[in-house]
Image (cartoon, rainbow, N blue to C red; front, side):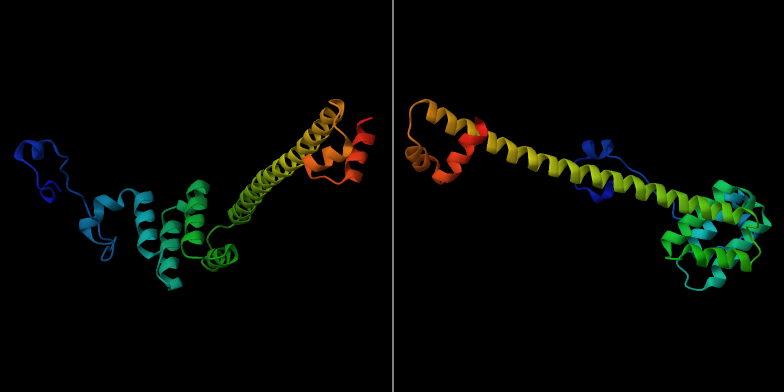
Length: 193
């Protein structure tokens, strides 16, 4: 990283210098001995397998991931299951029904699936309600401001006309100064009195 900058030696010594670790999952085979340490952390392995296969259009690849979850008892972890399935739905445009069908086909989920499905529905509903409330408040504030502004302008007009009349200016002259028709000025005077 540091070699990308053309600076003096003194400054180069102070620059951030690092290397990165790239773990290419393309050729990952969890059965190989060299990945034994990695596979000891079941949740990490499950997530790596999921990320490796998430963009595969073949449903078979996703089924392999689900079978790994089942084999290692991860389907009993509701939090893990909910987050992982949500990730699958939103990353690869699977519908909730497609995911449930896939899980049922592979006999994964059992009693948890209706609960998980209901939690996802509830979460979506709650987010929709919250967005609706915010939109409603925003619309209400805009309408309230518009109404308030219109009332303020009308109040200002009335005060201006009444002040001009109190100063002895004739209605015809008030009409000339304000640009309002004489009939409208007379209505304003009637409302004010």
